[in-house]
Length: 391
Ligand SMILES: Cc1ncc(COP(=O)(O)O)c(C=O)c1O
Image (cartoon, rainbow, N blue to C red; front, side):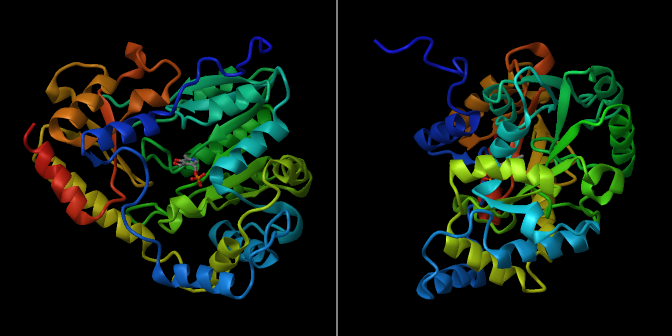
């Protein structure tokens, strides 16, 4: 007999990404569901990582990360957002954004705390909050309508959700799955929020280098009033087409980072040394990020113009490598049902946006939207479009 109850997360099964990828494989479908590229990282980066291995950099890295990588992250963020993080005390290299998010939530959320999430929300946040003993309070964005076909933040509702138990707000911009970016007026709203109650901001910026139409990534750390409240998390996996390497980072004021490091230290201790050394060397190139937004913008535009000839209507994506499509021309259905059907019958897998809500089967979580990942070779995108044209 085992102690009961055994599970701390009895209602949590596999993720929708695993489920749709498995279905794609079973049906030999094109997988535009899970967010990973079907092409390789830059050759120079692969070379830098293998050189690090041949140079003998194969033992434990320092707990917080190799100094050269933390220094490179500090100067990158200084030029992006004008804030000078100290490599020694404010930056930690993590096993992807995932570990940074989990360590931040476990370190900073206390039992009984409330954490505000923006719906639709990436699936990791709520289980991590619950493991920390907290409660997720989900604030839906205004969904798209015919008159205003974009998701918009609902700051009034966010403000009215604040109460003495509120400890943190999780931000994720550029936003997965909607592709929405933060605007200057959103940062104004965040400043008002912090003025009303000095909560923490956990800013998941995994897609920070993929922002379109000449815009640049706006982060709360670009505002002096917000930076002291913010834990910034990002991922090199998305930026360098290397999701399988699982290298990311986390930045926060020193006294906050000290708490996060206590969890990181006993979770994985440190991240793969040659990966860190290779990424640090690659970051010294002036062209490490240039061209990435343009590369993805071309893919977004290719997919959008192809979709316009089908019965799936593309929405606008301002960043990330995701595009939402409206499937209402195919008849009213739960998004998940339609995603499964398109995988089985048309041979293209997608992700139902309803899966990013707490109750995926409820009508208020279903806006007739599917998420497509366009981090795919043009030939893959073209083949998917050909299949969609048969709808
Ligand atoms: C919003 C968001 N945050 C975090 C992650 C996880 O990033 P990583 O693979 O670096 O752990 C993802 C991956 O899909 C993501 O979409």
